[in-house]
Length: 62
Image 1 (cartoon, rainbow, N blue to C red):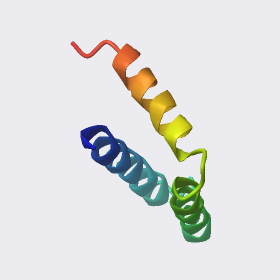
Image 2 (image 1 turned 135 degrees about the vertical axis):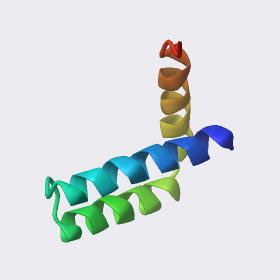
Image 3 (image 1 turned 120 degrees about the horizontal axis):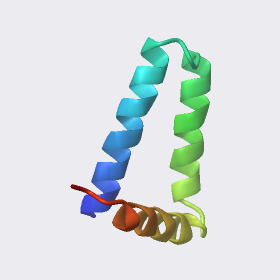
């Protein structure tokens, strides 16, 4: 649960920065958000969560 909230916050901040820097349009951000929302409702969601959890656990946090 904590990883999900942290990942959502991280990706939200990245998306906000991209919008601020005009690296992505508002329409593109909306499509990205909707894709993530609908991806979470599919059968692949546990595999994506496991992959992200493994990635974050492998990062050295000093």
